Length: 259
Image (cartoon, rainbow, N blue to C red; front, top):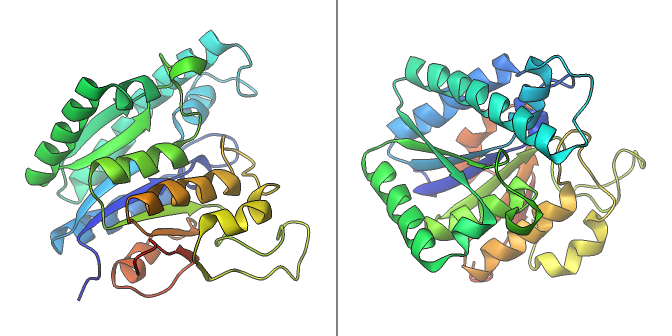
């Protein structure tokens, strides 16, 4: 029996892309297949995805992520089209329809637009469509940007009244020290309060994305305020979502405060 009905899954750039920015088609195929199969079992899943800028940079033949804001926005615009094309193709192969939702902090914090976004999520989920969410990096500026999709995914979890938030990343969860520096670092299986472990996450950063472990801890704190638990787990094998959906432990589980 599945433990959760409505799930928000966030995948980072390191899960979506190869180190050179090209889409990791094998992993994306597995992700879409797994999510589609869970949907077929009656679950409602929202996918929050990173990777648009990385894929855009790769498609444009650039050597690195642009420093200039306008160039980054251009890369995001190109990459978002390619990213959605890939998702749409894979999800259709597994019988799932998708809908794109691009958000900014300005939209989610505006009372009227927030209400409209929530209504759109509900309509898509009621239609058995998988909403695919990303920050609108092609137009976002510093004043209206979240800057990382971990925080955005926690907001989406709140908007959709999700049962759980799952953050798939390039590490297996939160460790008691940086595993890239300390081979004896131990995985922390359960966290009661994200505020208690914030100091452990400050130096752990993804090599490709804009966030790192600290943004995942902050996302867990946001979700916790709405009574939503969070799991941070490795994204190398997206089929672990099967286990997580059934309550089998993976990664680090951040309690909701009421469980």
